[in-house]
Amino acid sequence: MKITRIDIKILVDLYKSVDGLIPFIFYQRYKYSPATVFKTIEKHKDYIENLNDKFVLTNAGKDFVEKNRFVFGVNKFDRIPEDFKVQKIEINEPYLPNIKKLSKEILILPK
Image (tube, rainbow, N blue to C red; front, side):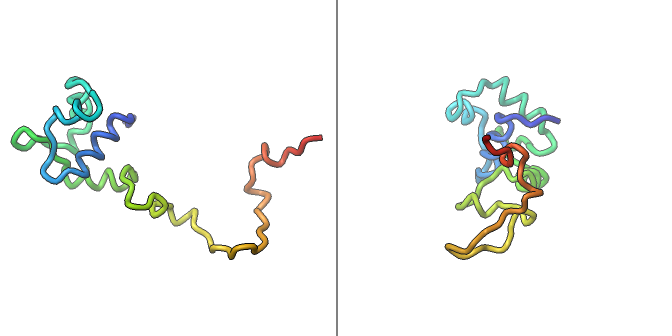
């Protein structure tokens, strides 16, 4: 299933809401037509449920949003995966990059 930017915005707004959102909110915020909103909700019916005319994210939906890292915290650098974190170097400490990991375009030097 392909996830669009519209899907992400709707899922994130539902994730951040306390009591759920009515469909008109998405028109007010983003000018999404009702057809667009209901198409997204139908596509993600495993993650979104309708309670008292409000759409609410299910627990599976909250896990889905968190797992795919759609939500930024206070500091967006807190979301850096552990695979990319390395030991910090001090200011003015020499740094030698791993040449094997550099792209070939960077290594091409002008003549």
